[in-house]
Image 1 (cartoon, helix red, strand yellow):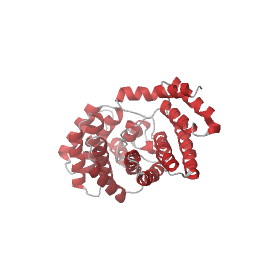
Image 2 (tube, helix red, strand yellow):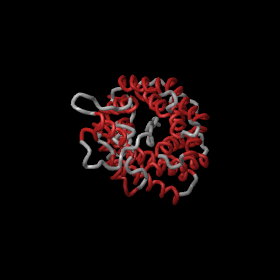
Image 3 (cartoon, helix red, strand yellow):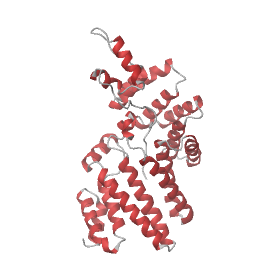
Image 4 (cartoon, helix red, strand yellow):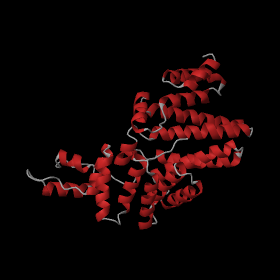
Length: 330
């Protein structure tokens, strides 16, 4: 299961509306600032034909990061931290640049630790650290402590729920493989609760860093993971336990989530382009059609739907779907 990184969902809140009397160019600049109103006042009050907009180095760092200019973002955030060494948000920002753009995980960990040192109630920092510990540094026990701390501090936060859901689902796979069905079911059910909370955020793209890291959207991926939890774990586990009625409902739920994911997913071309440019594994349409086809194949009356999905997936380049289609003589 791939690592999920969707940082800072509460990190930058964009204004809910832009008043009509604001210069559009000023508004565009300030949409990338943490303090929208302060930025507008600063630019409007100190800008003339011979002067430049006044924006903090922290805001400039975020602007560069959102634009994909890692080098400039790092220079700005380093400069800001030099003058503001007690800013938890700045250490968090630099940590994600280290982790996501530069793959310097030890330095990222130092920054997340520093952010928590400054504020030991900082839920987002605990969640980021948990994500890094689990997927990159192999410290599952500490990761679980961190994410539970984050969840206790902020149980409705979108990013916290996404990280907790991904960790629980991955652990459910491990337990399932060890034939510990009851524990696998429990973890999968808990992960579903977290992923459903993520879906309650109807505008996750309002955050600039989320928009930068997942410009193709996170909602479809969340539906994909819900499909996995219902099909790979709950349907399979209940079937093993002999509960056909329960298994049937989970199978139906998995298909519904895969369908929602397919309806909102980016094109295969967009996903592949992003994967190549960012060296990041994404959930693609080809995979979603494969997974939905696999789910349909367990319903006798829907085997033709399975074939249809596998053919689509094969056409999009998925080899496993091609094998399935041949075996089923689609």
